[in-house]
Length: 391
Image (tube, helix red, strand yellow):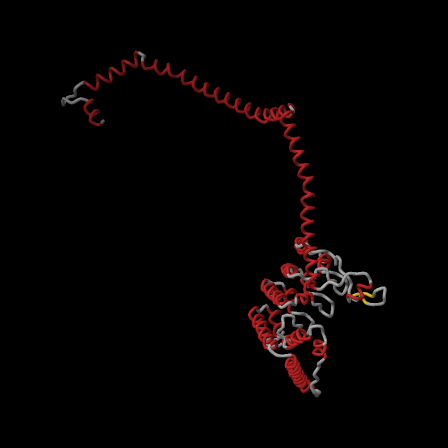
Protein backbone atom coordinates (compact mmCIF):
# COMPACT_ATOMS: atom_id res chain seq x y z
CA UNK A 1 0.00 0.00 0.00
CA UNK A 2 1.42 3.42 -0.94
CA UNK A 3 2.43 5.61 2.04
CA UNK A 4 -0.28 7.98 3.22
CA UNK A 5 -3.09 6.07 1.50
CA UNK A 6 -6.23 5.70 3.63
CA UNK A 7 -8.17 2.46 3.28
CA UNK A 8 -11.95 2.41 2.90
CA UNK A 9 -12.56 0.85 6.32
CA UNK A 10 -10.41 3.55 7.96
CA UNK A 11 -12.82 6.15 6.62
CA UNK A 12 -16.11 4.35 7.28
CA UNK A 13 -15.56 2.37 10.47
CA UNK A 14 -16.77 3.92 13.78
CA UNK A 15 -14.03 5.20 16.11
CA UNK A 16 -14.68 2.45 18.68
CA UNK A 17 -14.32 -0.23 15.98
CA UNK A 18 -11.02 1.29 14.83
CA UNK A 19 -9.77 1.36 18.42
CA UNK A 20 -10.62 -2.33 18.82
CA UNK A 21 -8.96 -3.30 15.52
CA UNK A 22 -5.76 -1.37 16.28
CA UNK A 23 -5.56 -2.57 19.91
CA UNK A 24 -5.80 0.97 21.33
CA UNK A 25 -6.99 0.57 24.92
CA UNK A 26 -6.94 4.31 25.71
CA UNK A 27 -9.12 5.14 22.70
CA UNK A 28 -11.53 2.37 23.64
CA UNK A 29 -11.87 3.68 27.18
CA UNK A 30 -12.42 7.20 25.77
CA UNK A 31 -15.22 5.93 23.49
CA UNK A 32 -16.87 4.06 26.37
CA UNK A 33 -16.64 7.18 28.53
CA UNK A 34 -18.35 9.21 25.81
CA UNK A 35 -21.07 6.57 25.58
CA UNK A 36 -21.64 6.69 29.36
CA UNK A 37 -21.85 10.48 29.28
CA UNK A 38 -24.35 10.34 26.40
CA UNK A 39 -26.44 7.73 28.23
CA UNK A 40 -26.55 9.86 31.40
CA UNK A 41 -27.60 12.88 29.32
CA UNK A 42 -30.38 10.93 27.59
CA UNK A 43 -31.65 9.34 30.81
CA UNK A 44 -32.32 12.83 32.19
CA UNK A 45 -34.89 13.49 29.40
CA UNK A 46 -38.56 12.55 29.59
CA UNK A 47 -40.17 10.37 26.91
CA UNK A 48 -41.30 13.26 24.67
CA UNK A 49 -37.94 15.04 24.86
CA UNK A 50 -36.17 11.75 24.26
CA UNK A 51 -38.13 11.20 21.03
CA UNK A 52 -37.35 14.74 19.85
CA UNK A 53 -33.68 14.21 20.62
CA UNK A 54 -33.74 10.91 18.73
CA UNK A 55 -35.33 12.52 15.67
CA UNK A 56 -32.81 15.37 15.77
CA UNK A 57 -29.84 13.00 16.07
CA UNK A 58 -31.09 10.75 13.28
CA UNK A 59 -31.70 13.80 11.07
CA UNK A 60 -28.19 15.12 11.72
CA UNK A 61 -26.75 11.70 10.95
CA UNK A 62 -28.71 11.47 7.68
CA UNK A 63 -27.54 14.96 6.66
CA UNK A 64 -23.91 14.03 7.38
CA UNK A 65 -24.25 10.89 5.28
CA UNK A 66 -25.89 12.92 2.47
CA UNK A 67 -23.02 15.43 2.51
CA UNK A 68 -20.48 12.62 2.32
CA UNK A 69 -22.41 11.06 -0.56
CA UNK A 70 -22.56 14.45 -2.31
CA UNK A 71 -18.79 14.84 -2.04
CA UNK A 72 -18.30 11.38 -3.53
CA UNK A 73 -20.84 12.20 -6.24
CA UNK A 74 -19.00 15.41 -7.17
CA UNK A 75 -15.76 13.49 -7.47
CA UNK A 76 -17.47 10.90 -9.66
CA UNK A 77 -19.46 13.44 -11.65
CA UNK A 78 -22.81 12.43 -10.13
CA UNK A 79 -25.20 14.38 -7.94
CA UNK A 80 -26.68 13.31 -4.61
CA UNK A 81 -30.29 13.47 -3.51
CA UNK A 82 -31.71 15.09 -0.37
CA UNK A 83 -31.10 13.40 2.99
CA UNK A 84 -33.54 10.64 3.90
CA UNK A 85 -34.28 10.26 7.60
CA UNK A 86 -35.08 6.65 8.49
CA UNK A 87 -37.24 6.55 11.64
CA UNK A 88 -38.07 2.86 11.40
CA UNK A 89 -35.51 1.92 14.07
CA UNK A 90 -36.96 4.56 16.41
CA UNK A 91 -40.54 3.40 15.80
CA UNK A 92 -39.53 -0.22 16.38
CA UNK A 93 -37.78 0.69 19.63
CA UNK A 94 -40.78 2.62 20.96
CA UNK A 95 -43.14 -0.19 19.96
CA UNK A 96 -41.16 -2.79 21.95
CA UNK A 97 -41.90 -4.06 25.46
CA UNK A 98 -39.32 -1.64 26.93
CA UNK A 99 -39.61 1.43 24.69
CA UNK A 100 -37.45 3.77 26.76
CA UNK A 101 -34.63 1.27 27.20
CA UNK A 102 -34.66 0.33 23.51
CA UNK A 103 -34.74 3.99 22.46
CA UNK A 104 -31.74 4.78 24.64
CA UNK A 105 -29.91 1.77 23.22
CA UNK A 106 -30.75 2.77 19.64
CA UNK A 107 -29.46 6.31 20.18
CA UNK A 108 -26.22 5.09 21.78
CA UNK A 109 -25.58 2.80 18.81
CA UNK A 110 -26.38 5.62 16.41
CA UNK A 111 -23.58 7.71 17.96
CA UNK A 112 -21.10 4.85 17.19
CA UNK A 113 -19.55 4.66 20.67
CA UNK A 114 -21.67 1.82 22.03
CA UNK A 115 -19.71 -1.30 23.14
CA UNK A 116 -21.78 -3.38 20.70
CA UNK A 117 -21.37 -1.05 17.71
CA UNK A 118 -21.36 -2.79 14.31
CA UNK A 119 -18.87 -1.79 11.61
CA UNK A 120 -19.41 -1.82 7.85
CA UNK A 121 -18.47 -5.52 7.70
CA UNK A 122 -21.11 -6.54 10.23
CA UNK A 123 -18.69 -7.25 13.09
CA UNK A 124 -19.21 -5.93 16.59
CA UNK A 125 -16.41 -4.65 18.83
CA UNK A 126 -16.57 -7.90 20.82
CA UNK A 127 -16.09 -9.89 17.60
CA UNK A 128 -13.10 -7.79 16.52
CA UNK A 129 -11.25 -8.19 19.83
CA UNK A 130 -12.08 -11.91 20.02
CA UNK A 131 -10.83 -12.51 16.47
CA UNK A 132 -7.44 -10.79 16.96
CA UNK A 133 -6.83 -12.38 20.37
CA UNK A 134 -3.55 -10.66 21.29
CA UNK A 135 -2.96 -9.97 25.01
CA UNK A 136 -4.06 -6.35 24.49
CA UNK A 137 -7.15 -7.39 22.54
CA UNK A 138 -8.05 -9.92 25.25
CA UNK A 139 -7.92 -7.18 27.89
CA UNK A 140 -10.10 -4.98 25.67
CA UNK A 141 -12.49 -7.91 25.15
CA UNK A 142 -12.83 -8.42 28.92
CA UNK A 143 -13.55 -4.69 29.34
CA UNK A 144 -16.28 -4.80 26.67
CA UNK A 145 -17.83 -7.95 28.16
CA UNK A 146 -17.87 -6.46 31.65
CA UNK A 147 -19.43 -3.26 30.27
CA UNK A 148 -22.25 -5.22 28.61
CA UNK A 149 -22.84 -7.33 31.73
CA UNK A 150 -22.94 -4.27 34.01
CA UNK A 151 -25.46 -2.63 31.67
CA UNK A 152 -27.72 -5.69 31.80
CA UNK A 153 -27.05 -6.49 28.15
CA UNK A 154 -25.33 -9.86 28.55
CA UNK A 155 -27.53 -11.32 25.81
CA UNK A 156 -25.69 -9.08 23.30
CA UNK A 157 -22.49 -11.08 23.87
CA UNK A 158 -23.96 -13.60 21.43
CA UNK A 159 -24.77 -11.05 18.73
CA UNK A 160 -24.52 -12.75 15.33
CA UNK A 161 -22.86 -11.42 12.21
CA UNK A 162 -25.50 -11.24 9.51
CA UNK A 163 -23.40 -12.75 6.71
CA UNK A 164 -22.55 -16.10 8.38
CA UNK A 165 -24.50 -16.05 11.68
CA UNK A 166 -21.26 -16.40 13.64
CA UNK A 167 -20.81 -15.01 17.14
CA UNK A 168 -17.62 -13.78 18.76
CA UNK A 169 -17.21 -17.27 20.28
CA UNK A 170 -17.30 -18.87 16.81
CA UNK A 171 -14.59 -16.48 15.58
CA UNK A 172 -12.29 -17.06 18.55
CA UNK A 173 -12.58 -20.85 18.06
CA UNK A 174 -12.08 -20.66 14.29
CA UNK A 175 -8.97 -18.46 14.55
CA UNK A 176 -7.55 -20.47 17.49
CA UNK A 177 -7.66 -17.59 19.97
CA UNK A 178 -7.72 -19.58 23.19
CA UNK A 179 -7.68 -16.67 25.66
CA UNK A 180 -10.54 -14.95 23.81
CA UNK A 181 -12.63 -18.13 23.81
CA UNK A 182 -12.06 -18.71 27.53
CA UNK A 183 -12.94 -15.08 28.34
CA UNK A 184 -16.22 -15.44 26.42
CA UNK A 185 -17.03 -18.73 28.16
CA UNK A 186 -16.38 -17.16 31.56
CA UNK A 187 -18.69 -14.27 30.61
CA UNK A 188 -21.47 -16.78 29.91
CA UNK A 189 -21.61 -16.86 26.13
CA UNK A 190 -23.76 -19.48 24.39
CA UNK A 191 -21.17 -22.13 23.54
CA UNK A 192 -23.77 -24.33 21.85
CA UNK A 193 -25.10 -21.69 19.43
CA UNK A 194 -24.89 -22.88 15.78
CA UNK A 195 -23.65 -20.72 12.95
CA UNK A 196 -24.89 -20.64 9.36
CA UNK A 197 -23.90 -24.26 8.72
CA UNK A 198 -25.05 -25.61 12.09
CA UNK A 199 -21.63 -25.84 13.77
CA UNK A 200 -20.90 -24.64 17.27
CA UNK A 201 -17.53 -23.12 18.20
CA UNK A 202 -16.06 -26.34 19.58
CA UNK A 203 -16.98 -28.26 16.44
CA UNK A 204 -15.19 -25.62 14.34
CA UNK A 205 -12.10 -26.13 16.51
CA UNK A 206 -12.36 -29.92 16.03
CA UNK A 207 -12.59 -29.53 12.25
CA UNK A 208 -9.37 -27.50 12.29
CA UNK A 209 -7.76 -29.97 14.77
CA UNK A 210 -6.92 -27.31 17.34
CA UNK A 211 -5.97 -29.69 20.16
CA UNK A 212 -4.84 -27.11 22.72
CA UNK A 213 -8.02 -25.07 22.32
CA UNK A 214 -10.22 -28.17 22.55
CA UNK A 215 -8.41 -29.26 25.73
CA UNK A 216 -8.91 -25.81 27.24
CA UNK A 217 -12.61 -25.86 26.37
CA UNK A 218 -12.93 -29.36 27.86
CA UNK A 219 -11.34 -28.02 31.03
CA UNK A 220 -14.08 -25.38 31.16
CA UNK A 221 -16.75 -28.05 30.64
CA UNK A 222 -17.87 -26.78 27.24
CA UNK A 223 -20.35 -29.14 25.55
CA UNK A 224 -19.88 -30.24 21.95
CA UNK A 225 -23.46 -29.51 20.83
CA UNK A 226 -26.47 -27.53 21.92
CA UNK A 227 -27.62 -29.78 24.74
CA UNK A 228 -31.26 -29.09 25.59
CA UNK A 229 -31.57 -26.18 23.17
CA UNK A 230 -34.94 -25.58 21.47
CA UNK A 231 -34.93 -24.33 17.89
CA UNK A 232 -36.37 -20.84 17.56
CA UNK A 233 -39.37 -20.14 15.32
CA UNK A 234 -40.06 -23.87 14.80
CA UNK A 235 -43.63 -24.57 13.54
CA UNK A 236 -45.79 -26.35 16.10
CA UNK A 237 -48.37 -29.05 15.53
CA UNK A 238 -51.17 -26.61 16.35
CA UNK A 239 -50.16 -24.29 13.53
CA UNK A 240 -48.47 -21.68 15.69
CA UNK A 241 -44.80 -20.94 16.18
CA UNK A 242 -42.88 -22.32 19.12
CA UNK A 243 -41.42 -19.18 20.60
CA UNK A 244 -44.21 -17.53 22.50
CA UNK A 245 -45.28 -18.84 25.91
CA UNK A 246 -48.87 -19.38 24.70
CA UNK A 247 -47.82 -21.51 21.74
CA UNK A 248 -45.41 -23.50 23.89
CA UNK A 249 -48.13 -24.09 26.49
CA UNK A 250 -50.46 -25.36 23.73
CA UNK A 251 -47.74 -27.84 22.77
CA UNK A 252 -47.32 -28.94 26.37
CA UNK A 253 -43.85 -27.38 26.59
CA UNK A 254 -42.49 -25.26 29.46
CA UNK A 255 -42.18 -21.48 28.98
CA UNK A 256 -39.22 -20.38 26.88
CA UNK A 257 -36.12 -19.53 28.86
CA UNK A 258 -34.94 -15.96 29.16
CA UNK A 259 -31.32 -15.27 28.12
CA UNK A 260 -30.33 -14.99 31.80
CA UNK A 261 -32.01 -18.30 32.67
CA UNK A 262 -30.44 -20.02 29.69
CA UNK A 263 -26.97 -18.74 30.60
CA UNK A 264 -27.41 -19.85 34.19
CA UNK A 265 -28.52 -23.30 33.00
CA UNK A 266 -25.61 -23.61 30.57
CA UNK A 267 -23.15 -22.60 33.27
CA UNK A 268 -24.60 -25.15 35.67
CA UNK A 269 -24.45 -27.85 32.97
CA UNK A 270 -20.85 -26.94 32.25
CA UNK A 271 -19.98 -27.12 35.94
CA UNK A 272 -21.67 -30.50 36.35
CA UNK A 273 -19.98 -31.84 33.23
CA UNK A 274 -16.56 -30.69 34.50
CA UNK A 275 -17.17 -32.42 37.85
CA UNK A 276 -18.34 -35.60 36.12
CA UNK A 277 -15.24 -35.54 33.90
CA UNK A 278 -12.99 -35.27 36.97
CA UNK A 279 -14.83 -38.13 38.71
CA UNK A 280 -14.60 -40.28 35.58
CA UNK A 281 -10.89 -39.52 35.27
CA UNK A 282 -10.25 -40.56 38.88
CA UNK A 283 -12.38 -43.69 38.46
CA UNK A 284 -10.48 -44.55 35.28
CA UNK A 285 -7.11 -44.22 37.01
CA UNK A 286 -8.03 -46.28 40.10
CA UNK A 287 -7.87 -49.74 38.38
CA UNK A 288 -4.52 -48.81 36.88
CA UNK A 289 -3.16 -47.78 40.27
CA UNK A 290 -4.48 -50.98 41.86
CA UNK A 291 -2.84 -53.07 39.13
CA UNK A 292 0.49 -51.28 39.63
CA UNK A 293 0.38 -51.91 43.41
CA UNK A 294 -0.45 -55.58 42.85
CA UNK A 295 2.36 -56.09 40.34
CA UNK A 296 4.84 -54.33 42.64
CA UNK A 297 3.86 -56.56 45.57
CA UNK A 298 4.29 -59.72 43.49
CA UNK A 299 7.69 -58.56 42.26
CA UNK A 300 8.92 -57.85 45.79
CA UNK A 301 7.66 -61.26 46.93
CA UNK A 302 9.50 -63.02 44.11
CA UNK A 303 12.75 -61.20 44.83
CA UNK A 304 12.61 -62.03 48.54
CA UNK A 305 11.46 -65.65 48.32
CA UNK A 306 12.85 -67.08 45.09
CA UNK A 307 16.37 -68.61 45.62
CA UNK A 308 17.12 -68.87 41.93
CA UNK A 309 16.95 -65.07 41.67
CA UNK A 310 19.64 -64.67 44.32
CA UNK A 311 21.84 -67.38 42.75
CA UNK A 312 21.48 -65.74 39.37
CA UNK A 313 22.77 -62.41 40.70
CA UNK A 314 25.64 -64.14 42.56
CA UNK A 315 26.64 -66.00 39.38
CA UNK A 316 26.46 -62.75 37.43
CA UNK A 317 28.69 -61.02 40.00
CA UNK A 318 31.26 -63.85 39.90
CA UNK A 319 31.42 -63.78 36.11
CA UNK A 320 31.87 -60.04 36.14
CA UNK A 321 34.73 -60.00 38.73
CA UNK A 322 36.62 -63.30 38.19
CA UNK A 323 38.30 -62.33 34.91
CA UNK A 324 39.76 -59.00 36.19
CA UNK A 325 41.06 -60.76 39.33
CA UNK A 326 42.82 -63.50 37.28
CA UNK A 327 44.40 -60.94 34.95
CA UNK A 328 45.71 -58.90 37.91
CA UNK A 329 47.14 -62.03 39.59
CA UNK A 330 49.02 -63.06 36.41
CA UNK A 331 50.48 -59.59 36.02
CA UNK A 332 51.70 -59.60 39.66
CA UNK A 333 53.42 -62.96 39.15
CA UNK A 334 55.30 -61.64 36.11
CA UNK A 335 56.46 -58.55 38.01
CA UNK A 336 57.63 -60.74 40.95
CA UNK A 337 59.67 -63.02 38.66
CA UNK A 338 61.34 -60.05 36.96
CA UNK A 339 62.24 -58.53 40.35
CA UNK A 340 63.77 -61.84 41.51
CA UNK A 341 65.92 -62.06 38.35
CA UNK A 342 67.40 -58.60 38.85
CA UNK A 343 68.06 -59.19 42.55
CA UNK A 344 69.88 -62.47 41.74
CA UNK A 345 72.31 -60.64 39.41
CA UNK A 346 73.13 -58.13 42.15
CA UNK A 347 73.69 -60.91 44.68
CA UNK A 348 76.11 -62.62 42.28
CA UNK A 349 78.26 -59.56 41.63
CA UNK A 350 78.52 -58.31 45.25
CA UNK A 351 80.84 -61.11 46.61
CA UNK A 352 83.15 -60.72 43.59
CA UNK A 353 83.59 -57.00 44.26
CA UNK A 354 84.35 -57.69 47.93
CA UNK A 355 86.91 -60.38 46.93
CA UNK A 356 88.81 -58.03 44.57
CA UNK A 357 89.48 -55.62 47.42
CA UNK A 358 91.07 -58.38 49.50
CA UNK A 359 93.52 -59.70 46.81
CA UNK A 360 97.32 -59.52 47.91
CA UNK A 361 98.61 -57.56 44.90
CA UNK A 362 95.83 -55.02 45.26
CA UNK A 363 96.82 -54.51 48.90
CA UNK A 364 100.52 -54.18 47.88
CA UNK A 365 99.68 -51.52 45.32
CA UNK A 366 97.75 -49.57 47.94
CA UNK A 367 100.73 -49.75 50.38
CA UNK A 368 103.25 -48.59 47.74
CA UNK A 369 101.03 -45.64 46.78
CA UNK A 370 100.73 -44.64 50.41
CA UNK A 371 104.51 -44.93 50.93
CA UNK A 372 105.23 -42.81 47.84
CA UNK A 373 102.93 -40.08 49.11
CA UNK A 374 104.66 -40.00 52.50
CA UNK A 375 108.38 -40.02 51.23
CA UNK A 376 109.99 -36.47 51.36
CA UNK A 377 111.32 -34.91 48.17
CA UNK A 378 114.63 -33.00 47.68
CA UNK A 379 113.14 -29.67 48.82
CA UNK A 380 111.67 -31.32 51.89
CA UNK A 381 108.11 -31.42 50.57
CA UNK A 382 105.94 -34.46 50.01
CA UNK A 383 103.64 -35.48 47.18
CA UNK A 384 100.94 -36.01 49.67
CA UNK A 385 101.04 -32.34 50.71
CA UNK A 386 100.19 -31.11 47.20
CA UNK A 387 97.53 -33.70 46.90
CA UNK A 388 95.96 -32.72 50.18
CA UNK A 389 96.21 -28.99 49.27
CA UNK A 390 94.42 -29.53 45.96
CA UNK A 391 91.75 -31.39 47.80
